[in-house]
Image (cartoon, rainbow over all chains, first blue to last red; front, side):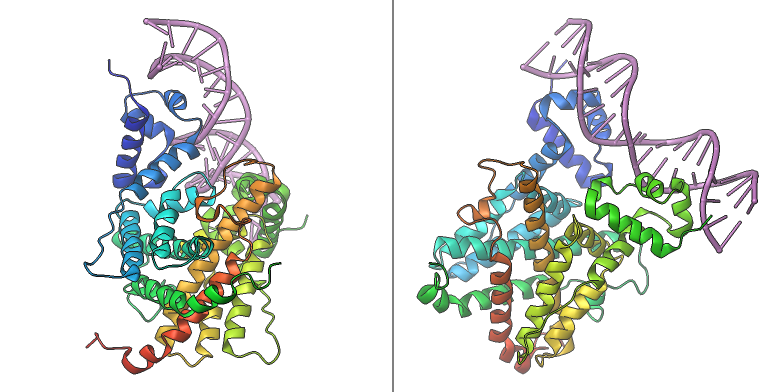
Length: 205
Length: 205
DNA sequence: ACCTGAACACCGTTCAAGT
DNA sequence: ACCTGAACACCGTTCAAGT
């Protein structure tokens, strides 16, 4: 009888995530989908958090930035942000899985790295690029997580009335807010460019 | 024997959160800290998520913005963001509790509302204010959640080596990144101001 | 190297019944 | 109005033992 690799386990976990969601992604359900006992999973991964980190890595790795031809560094940053947004939305509860993995420092580093690289291509120094990439990353993940929860709630027919989030109660949920956020970010980055150049280590010795 | 109010339950939950953390905030631990059976909690709250939402509301309500005298609307926005940041950091796992409550649309609306009000005071229309408040809110919560996890991990002596997050591996963890993000946000908002004024409903009919 | 079997120490939630 | 007692249907994880 065929034995399972670490990748088989991650693939099975992604399948459960995709069509049943994170609450159904238990070690027991995962094991039985592979025809194994739950305890067998602990040969491949030390614990569930580590397994979820591998799942998060895979979700992030599937991001496919589409950069408009002839676009400048802003186009590159925007393309990376949108690709990450889409990758997170591609799996049920994808944003939440990546969010918690990132918060715990267990993986999904690629997401931040790609954003930082795109920002660097605009001529910012590495420290600035990494710091503002973090800002953008947290916006993307927070916003996407929020959108995804609401999309899923709506598709389940929950919250049929009046439960609209206070922060955007007049607007159709989340529509355009994501792109607006990215635009705001890029405008801020452009506006602070010269300050970073002239006096970035002003109040450090 | 004295019976407990809903507020007593929330206060006890906050106490457990503060000195034992979210994983220890179980219905069973909470009940026993009140001298009750777990099932008694279900008279006060329909389920654990709703209870956590009440806890999140309380955490957010304790935000105390300190606005520098003589400051303009930017000072107001900055003060609200910092107050929220501090309020989240004031309780163990505070950012995570508020983050999940917000994502589920169960509460903590005050946070977004306060940011939106501060932004409105800069002369932006309501739709713009709400949309960009959402952007800022997701950054604040994402960033704070990340900082808090790392602060707690460090204080437990975990991650003693090399586990530095890729997005800021050269920088001391989180220092200044939060304020830098707020500054970036304000710069972006200022830069897009005239566009919002002149053609905010350009591609709507 | 990879997995089973059985157990441990928990969870959130329901519900009839008490006072 | 507020709570108990008992149960239901689960969890993640460990570990000796098998092949």
